[in-house]
Length: 343
Image (cartoon, rainbow, N blue to C red; front, side, top):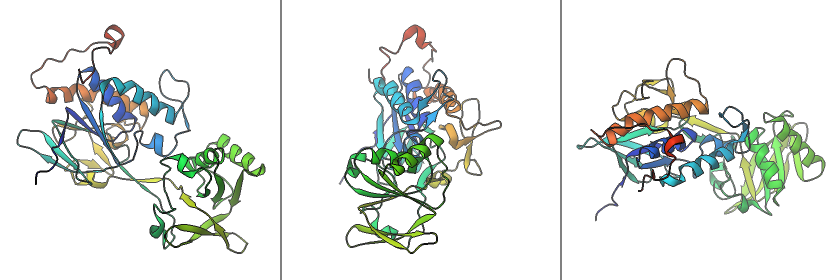
């Protein structure tokens, strides 16, 4: 039995956050084919997963842009270059091949082959912060979810949301306005999210569109083959059992290097050390851009990731097309027509 052939590309990007997506654009201008791997089920990284409706103010030329809209714009920008995606899978191993290329295999066995790798994994692999409820694993994907993949699945459902940050507030507002019956549970009276989101939740609560319980925690889950109720402990009151269809504990995502820590890269704490000439690592052919890297003066800003991606692809081009002369051209002169990587 033969295995499925690996996905071959010129530049393999591990991480589909803003830095990784912009790298596709810069590589596309050089007619390099790109493929991206991301553990999350959709592109965008933190912007999509943690604060899709949070405004970002430090992207040049955009006085303010919602995080989710920035991702949509980046996806539109790279569409002409036809990148490939392996989503919902984690890059697990990297093996150098005899021809100099790297073979990257995911946790689900999908294989990728490329002469250059750009690690753009943000702060690493994101894992949900789970509340300390003994039987929570019994209901995962059967009523307990840590991210909202398709909001339409929650329409008309009884949803208990736990958390007090932007993600919890944003989803409480969105789902309440799209037909879900929302109970929001927060262990404090003060929220960590954007003031306008807090105000909106409080307004929805005062109008009866959201049930808001503060100084409270979800402490128990019950059901047979799926979640049927949650136990809520409110400070100074008796525990209450509430019938529900879905429990969303939105306490953020915990960044971990995961398998990256085993790839032989030089690390400083939980970041990859790079050379700022081209953001290369100590392993020739492997680069790191965005929040995952570190160097003297490093700033964890999206615009810095864009800069790093731009310089990185200039170096990666030489690995993809050894001996080929690289001619830098301004897009204001050439545009992007005719530069499609699939052309």
